[in-house]
Image 1 (cartoon, rainbow, N blue to C red):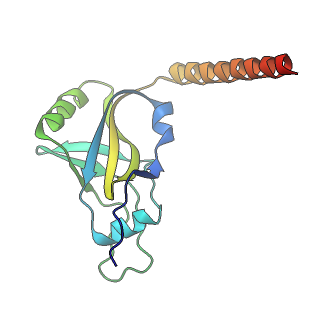
Image 2: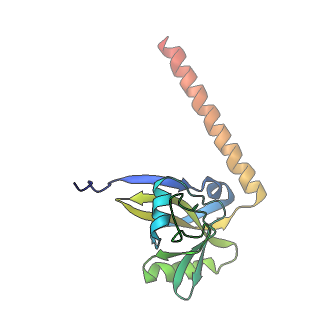
Image 3: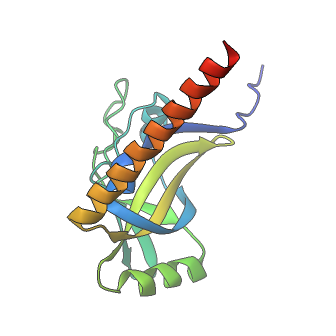
Length: 161
């Protein structure tokens, strides 16, 4: 009996540190060229995007330093954990990313790795590095937002009682 095709979006890994370290300017959804054991390892929910980056090389986009651990039941066909993986993008998107990433301070980083309708996808972003004071300012704004939300919810609770 055939299994029904997976639908929806199942997140495997996220790069939350990228939101802290960079100003995200533009995002893209890309497909990945993977081997069979990589797909099986990803379906187990194991991957790390922490040190990942995208490099444009010869009109092709490559994802570097993303850690997909070896598949436990794999044999000699197993993949290396940190190999570079080709991204599937339209030529116009690759050209745009290449021209933008040449600018000073810009880079391309992975934000999320997920399955969408049964296919492995990666969300990448054109990003500009934050300065240390920008990181502190973002953290301060986040804390202020939390405090105001807490105060509002506490006031609503007192009002109901």
